[in-house]
Image 1 (tube, rainbow, N blue to C red):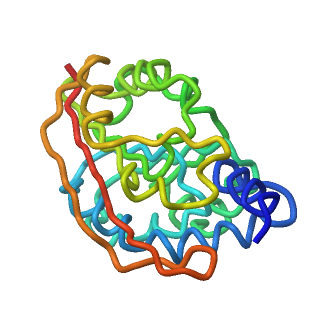
Image 2 (image 1 turned 120 degrees about the vertical axis):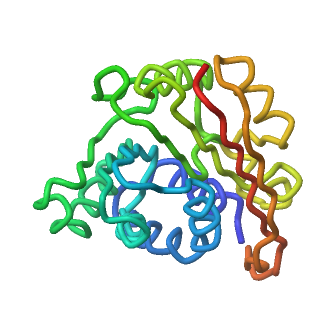
Length: 218
């Protein structure tokens, strides 16, 4: 496959848009099923949790949160207008029930008031944060005291083998994520490293893994 293909793929993974957006969203659902389940297990979702997700894509996995515990509220923010449209369509009943809301927003400027939620999670978005300190400052603002932030990614040792990451991805090892959180008013409380089934990239089977780091607001 051409370098142009990899470049377009990277751009779409960062911000699905145009005619390819729906297809990209569906593909992300397929390849991210294990990383989502690993993250949801680690969230320890409880009744009355108020949860924010940064980068919910087409919202395919939102219903699974309510299957874990129906007595929660959820807000999803994404800076892809097409993903906002799709997630709204895919979760119409939960929105009508007042359980779910979606917003078009940049992670560094969220349409939420201070201390709005007690849990935040984000899956496969860290690579694309232009200024991580700004994003973490904003997440810190909207978290309640002692609230928890969970960042889940594919670790650097896995991602560096994927041909599209040369276009706009910043890769992180476990130590990088820990340092980033500890240096921005969070205290790391849990780390999960878990292998996933191999994923096909460019016709080749490649290893895949979840790296999850949870930190508490200081």
